[in-house]
Image 1: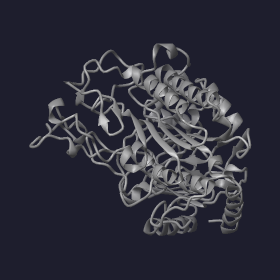
Image 2 (image 1 turned 45 degrees about the vertical axis):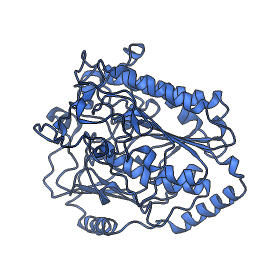
Image 3 (image 1 turned 135 degrees about the horizontal axis):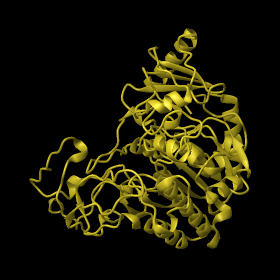
Length: 500
């Protein structure tokens, strides 16, 4: 860690905040795409087949980060890590499955709780995917029908008392308001508002016509009759616009808007079908981009744009369909990177990141400093002058310096992980993959052959990203001293939390 740089950052931030009145604290909006790859952002991929004019404009008005990372290569862990400022692997690795219990920690502060203590109005609209206490509404004696695996556990609509509140969700972790469908491809297929399901499921899910690309990937379970998957993103977008319209100038607000797109099921509404040259997924990204534009327009319409910190990112890399997209449409959702969702190669967790805050974040800048979504909570705490309670956000670093245009990150190291015992360490320009392979998602043979990837004969992988961003030249055997150095650092970070 660069201690002198971090000290300078903190001195600047404290001076900035002390001069501001409480009413001048910025509003904060986090727009969080789902399964959107590094190369799906048009301004970041010169060969993109997907237009993203609103995100491109956001990048031109703010700062685009080219070395930004989610905590995991899958959904739930990345969300946990961002809201807690803590590596997910300190607690768990996988996703919350259908009707699983909450994973956020009661004894650790979330970003929403931190901002609520600072007088913020808080809302989560969209995909939660961090669990609820379903036992609170499950009827006595109910045992789910068992399928082939945990994802196939089946409940019936009558197994729950839908009139009761459900603890453990957003309202239990600092949010004043929630609206969404929890997870777009998990039951119950119904609308939630605050801590209740407000549209009671009465049937088992029956998927309608084909998706625009890929499989439905929808788990069986309780559903509204004729649940309209296509209405999900439009409804969430309208709710976000409406919530912004109700906010007051004298009360700062925090909106966490985790999208359900472009995650499967890939179902762009008719207005966006054919708007890209990258099949249904590309069209769904265009719709995602439109939602970003509508949220920014709502902020401008109601006079909030100039004092709102907007953060756009994605929870992990693109899904496995990205390989077919390369072959059939010549669009690389991972851009120049190796790997997809689930992988600990760069394409699994290096994600788009744009930050816009007029007057604070210089516009039109591209920053190559190392930054993680885990750093969001410490960075925002610095901006609003909040003290993070002891025992919380132990892996988060304030990156205010990067937001101001500095090139030196507050962190030197970052641990990548998706599955248990499957770790990688980023340190400086180097990445050590402490596993036989950084791949989890199956890679087609044609892709490796076409891109010059050879089978790995070493017990691990080592790459210099400055010289080899695409991770083609494994230096594990050539640099044993570097492997030893990085292995030691990885063990130290895993053994204890990093110190801000």
